[in-house]
Length: 69
Image (cartoon, rainbow, N blue to C red; front, side, top):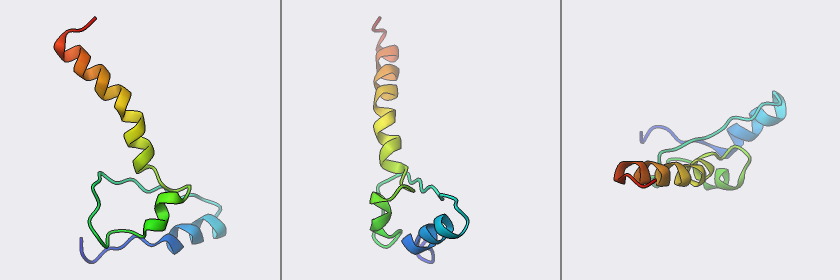
């Protein structure tokens, strides 16, 4: 993992030259030096959105496990 670093410029270059968005996901928490933190505020970021969407799913699963109707 120490040999890989996701660069913001790489994502932006693909967006401008090929008119494609490269989406970035991550299981979190990140280690220092894994990716450029500017990705957090770009349209390529999906990891924070995925966490936000999963809250309702987790709540439903917990309620199903404890038998709440």
